[in-house]
Amino acid sequence: MSGRAHLMWDEAVTGYDFGPDHPMDPVRLALTRRLVDALGLDREVEIVSAKPAGDSTLRLVHREDYIQAVKAASVDPRAADVSYGLGTVDDPAFAGMHEVSSLIAGLSVGAAEAVWRGDALHAVNFTGGLHHAMPGGAAGFCVYNDASLAIARLLELGARRVAYVDVDVHHGDGVQAAFWEDPRVLTISLHEHPRTLFPQTGWPEETGAGDGEGAAVNVALPAGTGDAGWLRAFHAVVPELVADFRPDVLVTQHGADTHFEDPLAHLAVSLDAQRAVQIACHELAHEYAGGKWVALGGGGYAVVEVVPRSWTHLVGIAAGRPVVPETVIPEGWRREVFARTRQLGPVRMTDGRWPLSWGDWEAGYDPADRLDQAVLATRRAAFPLRGLLA
Image 1 (cartoon, rainbow, N blue to C red):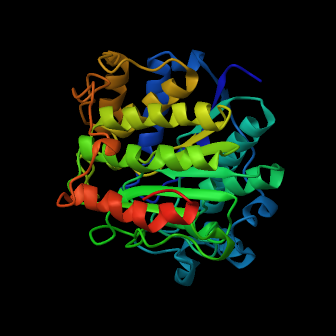
Image 2: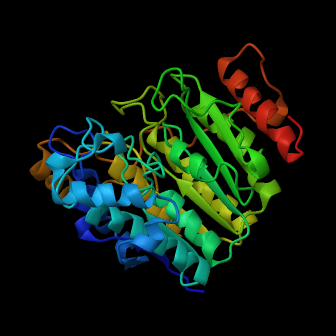
Image 3: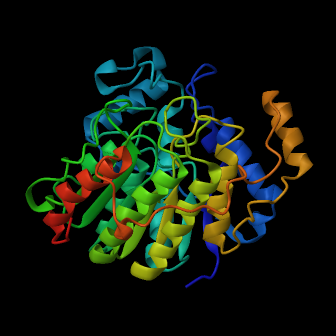
């Protein structure tokens, strides 16, 4: 087993570009990669590329007709078939779309393979986490569902149980759909309530079907939830489920769009709380999955202020060299930020809220509190299906 975490990267991922007016600006990927270097984390990880996912790999999750539709739109974006979600406002078609989307998928699959085979204990692909893509269509800025493909590849390689934890502000609907009836995959998603945010799914009552009943768990958080509530909900649900499931591998999705500065959602979570959940996921991997951890990126549209810092923290944690929150960001990186975006970059690796605290669920709950109502709804809907007390 290699002692060095893998950081999956290929500069070509910055070609995942829906255009100048789209919120998913690929500068967020480039700036994250540069911040990793600026803080010296590139010396603590093995930086690895991977081949783009081929058709046989893509077919582990996606329909053949959809793959062909993506390829056609990639050659001629003007001919994109909107019935597949391509050429829409959310997912505009662009030249080379298939190539860069399959590369991002390949990086996540490569991360999963490295962890499963023991080449690395942890692997990070912050360019991935495109969790909305469905077997037969693009959705929510996502063309190929690299998270689902990584999980499917782990199952193909022999994993018996894979736990997927998604803390993006949006429901991980595509991953849930891919494994809706599969008891080998436990999907847990914490997200803003579907009443107030895309994709309007992820209700507590969505718990899987058939043999997979009880294998989908959803925590629908009230708009405005901040650090203490977010961390309380995570710790009231995720550790107990992961401990019971005992996965062979833990796959996590770390969308940074829960942040209070994100323009597309309504939670009020700080960078420091995001870091706390990253640490918690790392600990869960070691405690229940033999340390095998595949960590992905996801959403995040405060592309200068939030995303690079959040995912750099993720890389540091995976590398075994967590970045101290009070760390001053090198001036050279801030100059690059200004040169690329004409925005002033952040000065420190914290929002000033570290250390954090939250109420332990085991100490009791308030049935009149909206956050506690959300947690209780999840526990009542999902926990008994897994033989756990609500």
